[in-house]
Length: 354
Image (tube, rainbow, N blue to C red; front, side):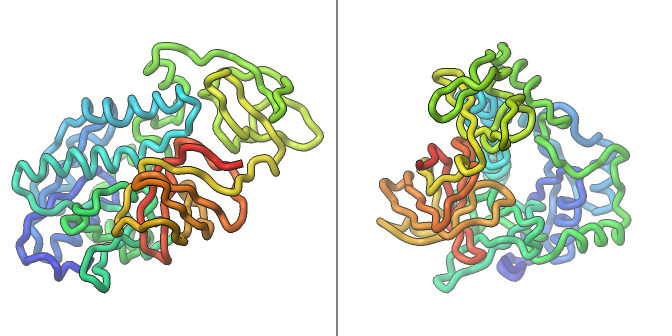
């Protein structure tokens, strides 16, 4: 969305993480004459030191505050994450957090404070369509595009959002950070893992969260033939190849998790492919389409997408039939729908079609 759509001097809150992206986003907003305030969200243990955030805000020349949302994050994201694994599903906590926390609870608090706009360092673009309504599009830097994670945003929120990094590349953002002389935290590194499990040891997190360890059970093939034993469902994800411990002429992959029988189903590579999926809880960023239409379906982050036919069984449920079968369709993950670069909406994968 162009900055010209906002009145000069309008107040905007920037979700200030302590990293490069949000700091540069704040600087770009400052340059456009907006009144910027930084808001740091304390969601879990760890995170940047207050000294680093103070130094960032001082160089940027903006006030900042910290909101302790650990209880909200625990209830809305951590409980969801553990619960999905307990059901044998593959959760997507980033999609959940964006809707419930960053553009949910945070927006609620900003409304209470009378702040009309929210900005983040996401690599996505907002622009007006032919009918003057707001549209969410992929970021110009396709290697960093994060639109997939935002498909659950309320459509009515779009006019209140700014994404200053949508038109530039990550390389340009890093250079801008250096040019501004912004400080970098001594222990800072770009997040590649879950923010609440920095070392990626999610099995330990699940044991602590659920209060129990996963129960060993059978590794079986699609016909129910026992191939070996597994350590617990939380150690496996659909599409996994390594660490299965089952020798075979061709490699096995995890095809399905069955919590009701505590079984992990293994199969050869061709068994990973599915002609489609059923999604529920669908959220639309367009006028809800009726019946049948075509779009490009993205079934996980970094998935290139596949052309598909969508059949709306209900307002929030859709059957998706791929033009070509896709591998590792994982229940619990998110599917997002696009037309060109425009994000149309998305939902939660309930089951893969066979």
